[in-house]
Structure formats: structure tokens, C-alpha cells
Image 1 (cartoon, rainbow, N blue to C red):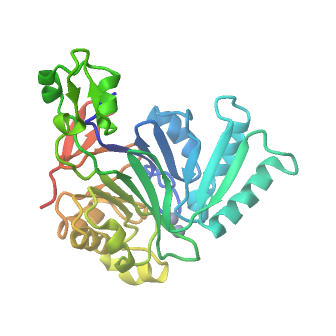
Image 2: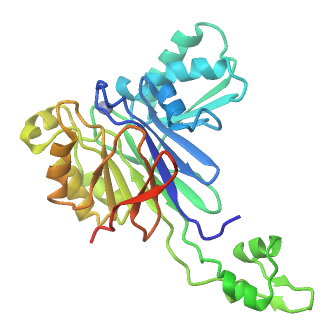
Image 3: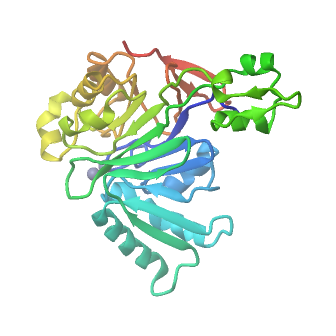
Length: 330
Ligand SMILES: [Zn+2]
Ligand SMILES: [Zn+2]
């Protein structure tokens, strides 16, 4: 077990808005944290992207929906159908707003008819607040304004904790093994020579954990300022540029400028844009956002990022070689 490796990884499976383009599939992403794997949205074509990403279907039983528009949920029908014929997965937990879940229920009725699904499918209605947590990690949902009711964004946050100082432990003669885990959990240990080692002997001062904020489609940003505050990375839609600010407003989407201003005002470290209309070249979105938030990146399908507090944003190449893509934003 590694005590000092706080981080999230995100793999973008689809980064287009509304309809796919040759290069971009419909919205879906995976957030990885320790043993957790969260599929966030599941547009049409997600199954094949999962295979192409090398992640596959294993342990993919937690699905978070930002909202119920078809470009974000249609892939669930195919995924449920595959899972029902594949013994590695026996359950799916799908979290979303009530309206989104009603639509998912309709989809499942189409897939399974009147038969009982051979896997357990739980539809779990989201409310703002904590969705799940353990000793080290918390997932929270917050409301997002978009078309229709019950849209949510997600905060993936590691809990604050004190780093384990391996050199100090070494110097005190704490053996590598379960004793160290006990100290990390806040319990004192007694060594074989009778000395007592207290947690504060081997733990540094408490440090806040990494915070990743994920927003799908959104119509405004003023209500996102609080949840995005101080995030190490903000992932948010950027469907249009300011040239079509009126269209963005009409369809309840954001421009690159609006998303970049939010990142700046919320003091986030890194900004990753997704949900890009196929009317735009990536460069147009990037240039508009970078004028406000330098170091911004526009996610491409199968991009794999590592997000770690205090560290540059790192893209993991397909051969697993990390490459730094953006400095911390000043
Ligand atoms: Zn959308
Ligand atoms: Zn939408």
C-alpha cells in the first residue's frame, strides 16, 4: 500500500456534444481512484471506447449521470445488454437525477422487455450532498443548471490527511508492514523492544486532498463557483465559443470564455474542456479559453490525465509514458 499517492485519473471516452464527429464520440469518461472506477455519462459508442482505452468492462459497476439527455445515456442500453451476457459483472448502480433515471428505466425496458434483467440494476436518485465515502475519499453531487430538472455535477475529493514520513518511521525502527497502516489510521503501536510509537511521531502536518470537479452540460456558471472553488482540476463543457454566445444561451450551454472565467474565478489549478460542438476546430475553443486561463487543455477521445494536488497536469500516453501538458495555473 502506498500512503503518499493521492490522485485521480480521468480517461475521456467521448468528448463531442450532441452528435459524434469523425474524431469525437458522445460523452462518457471514467474517473479512477484507488480501487474505484466511476463511469460518468454513457453516450452511444461507449462500449467500444472502453475497449479501445484498454480499461475494459471490469469493475465498471458505478455509473454517474450528469443529466438525462440522450447523448449522455443512450450507451447504457448496449452496456446493460453486454453485461447481462457476461458473467464478470453482476450489478450496475446508476446514479442520476429523477428525470434522467426515468429515461434510463425506459431504456432498460426496451433492452429487457418484460423479463427480469439477469443482472441487478439499481437506479439511485441523486440529491445534492454526499453520494458515497470511505476513510480516504468522498464523492459529492451538486446541482447544475441545464435544460430540464435534476442535473448534477460531481466533486471527487480525497479527505485531508497527514502524509506518512517513511524516513522518520525508518529512523525509529518501525518495520514495513501492517504497523505502518495502523499508524496511518491514527493508532499507536508498540515495537518488539517495548518502545511506543505514536502516529504524530511518523506523520507530517495535515494536507488537503486532491479535488476533482466534473461538470457535464451547463447553462450558467455563477452557481458552479462554490462547488468548483479551489479544485485541482475542473472538467467542464465548452460547447461553443463567444461567436455563438446567443446560441449557447438558447440551448443552455457554455462558451469557452464562460468556462475559463469560472476556472479563473474559482481559483482552480487546471482546466480541462470537453463536450465540444463539432462546428468548431479544437484550436478555436482552446484559444478563446487560453486568453483567460492559460494552460487550459481541450480533451480528446481517449485522453488519459493524472490529477494530483500541487503537481502539473499530466497526460498518460498510451504506452504509459507520462508527459506534462500544463503547469499549475498561477
Ligand atoms: Zn450534452
Ligand atoms: Zn444536455
